Length: 521
Image (cartoon, rainbow, N blue to C red; front, side):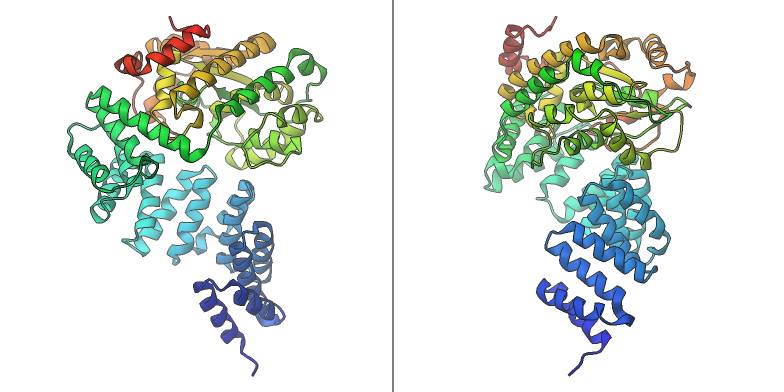
């Protein structure tokens, strides 16, 4: 008995809900052979390819569905999500923008489109879509959590905190929501801390299953001045995170050594790319937690500058040009391979990916701290680029890294003890190779005498002084960085010397850095 087109579609969608992807694929192929159902068939085939983790094939199927029926916003958004998985963010954003106006009755695809924008580093575009989805289908925890996360990035901190409290009232044991809430506000009493400690004491899980809770407990102990308890909790969280990650700091040290060996002055002078774009990139770099976000947001207030935020695009370009496949973000072997490439290839790759984030101002900021690893490639590929290196007291910087859940080389003090001297060696190398192409900004000077330092910075990167740059608290743009909450505050000096509250626990790291010749005085 021949099934109708509608019956085939219903059967395929029932099979998709049951995760019977073989049947979905069979129905899809039969539908594709029917002229009146080709778009539906390609859409269903895309779902099957997505489930099989074949994103390129999924994109092809979804895009064919869009070609067959331009009204298929579901296929467009599904294709965009798969393009994000492939790192093709600009294409993904273009697809979502084209169909965004047709999503207003679909909570599912509003949420998916919002997530595409969020993953592409455009939280201001994502936020209204999360809001629409939440209004259409209220009370869905995953959707509410996405709205809360995005609200933080666009500066709606109180609204985000309210959502996280609501979610925790329904699910008190949700560790990531406790973690997120702890980062949004300074604890003034132990109410939330006591609740988290009760969960820790009763859930019976090893530290590897309590990582977010331990970081959150550490943060609120720190807020309350319970320094030793905070340090103990951070230490437990980091040790557990390191065990889960299976991290070996020697891999990152070898990466730094490969950069120093490969990207020297002779290599740089042997091949400088021709300027291929009239815009001036300003790369703000340095160790994470050194003050790079503060400097970026000061520069972002200038009328001649726009910000691309933090992207992985430069690192991805180096990886692609190296031709070496690896599950790691970057390996030592990729550096000499990329260094042998024709000058201009990495720059072209980078610009082709970042352009969707730009509106055409004369200069743009790329603020990914660890681009400091690739300053040689930046200097070669972008002869007109300005390079800003932000640095602060190594012990303040080290503790700022240690207390966060983001940085593998900072989970344990012994790893920081190996990584920080390598980073200092790299800083010395870049100063020797690049000289005055690097604009050094010392965090302590920047927040202590901002007027003079901001004027100096603007002049050094070739921008005329503008009064607006003195008022960083007026920068209302979205920020999806680890500093998304702190960036809303006026400039302050509270963080200077903060590490001394933890001097006892940090003593082994301090001693090791001194022995390695790292300047701490």
